[in-house]
Image 1 (cartoon, rainbow, N blue to C red):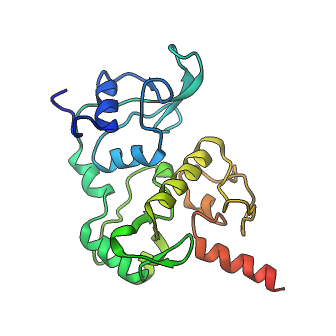
Image 2: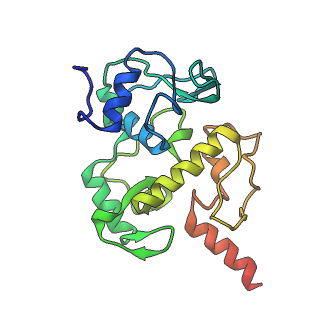
Length: 222
């Protein structure tokens, strides 16, 4: 397809071709991209995904082909939004600053890592954003950076995305593998908090690993 923005032969190139008819397609039997992070990257690149009736960038429905109830994806338009791209992505200048401020420390295992092996990730996951946030200010203060971002390796960034997407779909919050502790609330998203409200993430390991460890250590040390 001439308007396909992805390199021929890649998974994203295949999926964009499938979705180019602007219809809902099954992620199990039609699309190859299985990671939630893939669709976030698409949106960062200005690709406009359609939403369901509840405002999710996916739709749960019975697939006409495989007959299973699965997650479906759909393009809203073939037009690449330059506005979305500029507001959703993190500039190289800000990325460099964030890594310096956070001292090149990977948040999951507290490892110092080479800058090229670290990815800047939002504490509040994009899958829950009701609108694009203005997070690309290179003059962002140290306090704002520490409040908004963490550093993760590629594999741990994908792991966080899976937990956050599951939470968005089911209301069941993520946990550090094998440790079922939330320093505020419990494993369920508070139904009194809007799904796009960052307060619903407070207490979850994946929102703030550092605060989560401090709170758990306070209990253990008592």
